[in-house]
Length: 620
Image (cartoon, rainbow, N blue to C red; front, side, top):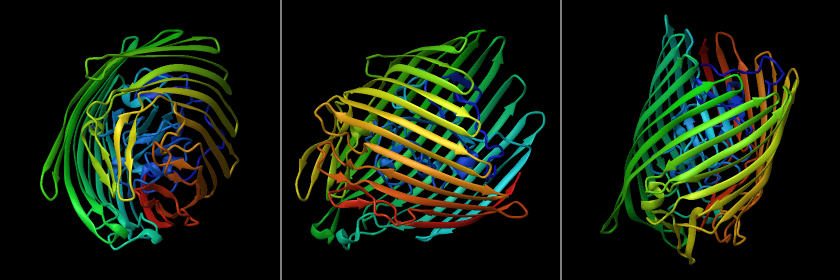
């Protein structure tokens, strides 16, 4: 599955009006759907997919840190300024199977090789009732390439901070409908310091990561039905920036999907089982960062089993999708306290939902309606209605929608305590689900080589789960997860792109005024985010320059710790060579800007300038 170097046609595809729920199931959507194909994914720098997705308006993790060195528990996804607590407020699906951790809701971005992704689809709202609580802030769908008769790739990258990556994969298809595909990669880097030079002490070391990941998939299909079986595994180990703190994770997922065309309708079934164990050590830092003392060792085994079924019936004007889903998650935080003691917390969380989603076309007007009844496992049902309308022609579309959604607290938020430097966050077994009510309206336009989209939105949040500050002293910050005051998020989302024969220029901007009802800003959410991308390609040469910028944001709920705004540049160069070879060179943070990512209470910083070069062989 070699990454394409450039587009073949400067014209954009028609306006995308459908969301892919599973590989062979699509549903009309009243929201904007952002689709990135393989050429765009391949043109961006970044070891993992999250660094590439940051060019999407509103995409961010819990903190500004890259998943390259960040603790996995900070890798939850936030879209459109909703924020995160480490747990995602957005659902990430890989071929229809959830990637969100069963214990904490965060994403292990090291699981997915960007070269093994055919396209991504992002919806930044809960405008459909087909997904459950993890999709309160929207969804990101990742889709593997369809197997071809014979394809393979092998690549190596190396760069600054003693970075090395070896990856490869391929597929083979037999007749009359059997195919196998897979990919694997191994990566290591010495990493970088996450504390600025003026604050470092003897205890500080570079934060780094070493991981190996792989996936294998088999497809059996004919004209009326398709079955896929897929398994993926991950083993990673990280040093967290001091001599005594590190974490590691081992996980594996087995998944299956079945699709069948019935007389006048279709049926899709999905099922998965995930096992995961997260391990971490925590420490207390002495004055001047001169000394460090180990405070606890933590092991968090967890597992999840889930299934979903979708039945779709099209009529002349109507389309109806109905079904149900179920997931059971179990996990425990097993902690050894030093010098003596222990602490254990955890349990079982079972959720299920029944849903229907319908749309009807009346000429250029299309109406939408959906409903979900969902039980988060605590005896209380949540009702999640959605509705909308769109009106448009081939080149333009106006759209509007209203919806209600919720998110249940994760096992991590309920039961696991953790420490980052001299900042402690306590669990809270009394957390209640958070709820969202939202409206949005906007328009999309495309013509020849030009595309534009504009959306205005308003979200009202109830019982928002956040890390509430209990006390602040010069030597210790204590926070606890709690249902904070109500909050609102309102803003504007805009993007535009223009293509010529050799050039592509695109830009996006998100305004998100995210505030608690008491006036403070929601932590880790900037008011303005923007990105710009310029690409030139000719005869196998592709050059991309990208800019990401963000205004100031706050680390905490009291808005005491300010993180200044920033702007970083990045570049990619790819050159096709004879015999299926491709050379590549990338620079991230080209101007070596210092980006503050948090406080513990010492400031923490993001990635410095990083360079990588590599060679890739493709057989297609």
